[in-house]
Amino acid sequence: MRRPGTEPDSVAPAGAPLSRTAATAAYYLAFVALGLFLACLGPSLLGLQRQTQTGARGISYVFFARAFGYLLGSRAGGRLYDRVPGHPVMSGVLLALAVLLALVPLTPCLWLLFGVLFVSGLAGGALDVGGNTMLVWTHREKIGPVMNALHFFFGAGALLAPLVVAAALSLSGGVAWAFRTLAVLMLPPAFLLSRLSSPPPLPLAQAETHRSRRALVTLVACFFFLYVGAEMGFGGWISSYTVTLRLSTEARAACLTSVFWGALTLGRLAAIPLAARLKPQTMLMADLAGCLASMAVILSWPRSLNALWAGTIGFGLSMASIFPTTLCLAQQRMTLTGRATGWFFVGASAGGMTLPWVIGQLFETRGPRVTMWAVLVDLGCAVGLFVALLLATRPTRN
Image (cartoon, rainbow, N blue to C red):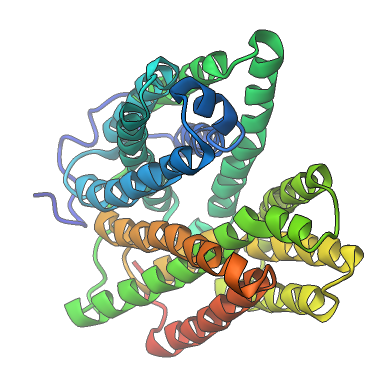
């Protein structure tokens, strides 16, 4: 087992000498690929439904299969990065994603599709943890702007995925070529990462104790559970919320969903220079205040489409930098190992599965407004955890 803080001989000779610029470019390309992978399922759902000859209720479980794999992949990947050089692992999971995406249009059976997407979730979770961990190990204390940029490139990939699917549908009438194209797009970052040596892990700070470290990891993982739950709950249900309240047509409601994700991506781009000037805790306080204000706008004028648009844009912009900035805050207050980052993404994956499911269970019985109230309660809990995080820890230097 490789302990954090050691630099085994196997790290340095693997591939070309480590260059921060080349490694960072490789991580950005990998996160464009990750965004493409995670966002391709929704727009291709009807095509997969025809392919497997199943109904909407049955095909909806593909999201759970992939999310559950993502959760397990995050946990296993985090432990793996502490033991072996990270770039070969990231390259390997990108190659695995390429193969699995190419297999998706070749699976006529629903249960076989579940299996392919579950395994792809394992690879996606490992890639997510790896990109964030390797970036921290590469840039160390100067992580703020580059971390926000990493998540901007993820958002760029997520915005491109529907365009790839739409182009495939226009040219061939099916989604097969979309998945083949996405499979090919996994290869460039896999090749680049295979040519670069892996960064050494961070040395553990002497002030850290096992108890304080475990408490901090737990707090951050729970915060990510709430954050991703709010993000996926809002993004997943805003269209149904709009249509059910008869505020707009189905087509315009779909545009509102795109506006939310577009605002989130734009906000991550805007956060890059801000992260170089502001402390992480300052950015997070402003982000959380913006999220609460956006929810207040939507709930105060529930019958106003203009208020819904304003609140959606504000919510996307405010949510944008929370995830990468929290990672930066955690890096200031503890040594980020692969195992710790893996637990963060376990919390995030669990949140992404839980709150959207809770909203779905209450949507018909309690009415569509339960969507915004559930997100508001979730955010209130996140604010409480953020305060606890600041009070419980102090910054450390690696």
